[in-house]
Length: 439
Ligand code: NAD
Image (cartoon, rainbow, N blue to C red):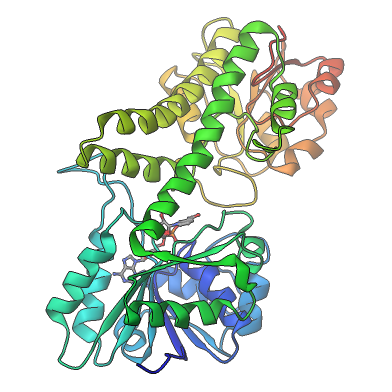
């Protein structure tokens, strides 16, 4: 079999992953034509907007799109045309947690992956490399292959690869420019290895060879779930310790610093917070829980389930601290929540901890309103909650905020963001997650 040289790429799904990932491929590979397609016309229109009002907030993204849109990067709703023309197709559609039916609340909803796969099978008139970019349960590639082979035209063949995406929202472009690793999983057949090489050659345009890891298909699929589960587990571990800090007077910053100095542990991802959010961590762990249960491994399922339960506990523990501190009732009180995104530098609010907090506050009949400026949000409030670590909140004129608040003026920092001592000197009563001081 002759080595495949990728000339045209189609990416199905113009979301947080498909958009930035394939825009960077277009930038780094001017010889490849990249078309990103989506059924969501509004989203495609935004990608194509004349003023580059792209649908995703991600530092550096607009710059990348500006350099290649119309040159070798295209956004379209014409899914069939892009499939027909491409020799390599990324499937980068959403894989949310199933809402109802078998495995509801845990299993991945593979409806979108299945539809995209069926579309490829129905439309393709020549051989294609089909790449799972979406995060999927282990052995999804097998189901995709069954669909493709059952529906393909004579003479067309499909090679399936797994190439999970490890970018983090907020740093997606930097992550894509300089990935820790690119992981490609393939069947260990001659054809599988050829397809793997074709995709590896695309990444080799900017990623050093030693960072391109090639493994078996199932290992690749599982590695993505494993990486997210272990990242979330670190957060839940440090958050569990933050609760002990608050009860004992220890300081979680000092504990993380001391623990992270151990070279076997390392300092990253040891920052206590009000809880992790985003569209991936919880869904991917629940997916792992479901997989473990399906494989009759209940203890393994329970182990991973605890990471999510700890996260839920951390969010409700923080809400309870707010209520307890505000004299055990927030009914009728006005609360400012600073930040709505699940972390800084992204516009993504999916599964954001802020949503949980606000839900708790509203259920206590507190007042929470939506405004555009932090200063305005804080005016005439009883308490301020820092829910997202936006740098902007460091630059607020806290003196003015204090002057305009009802007294006593409380600040609850769920992100270890502010200088608590500085605020206390102004007059605020401050509680910081993971610190045992009394207000
Ligand atoms: P998203 O919801 O932002 O984007 C998915 C897009 O696919 C949507 O715009 C949707 O309209 C489109 N789509 C669905 N079915 C389609 C079809 N049949 N044809 C054409 N378009 C279709 O999702 P996302 O955040 O980009 O995530 C995509 C996948 O990547 C998920 O599996 C996710 O778990 C994984 N992932 C996400 C991140 C992240 O940070 N968001 C990181 C790594 C991996």
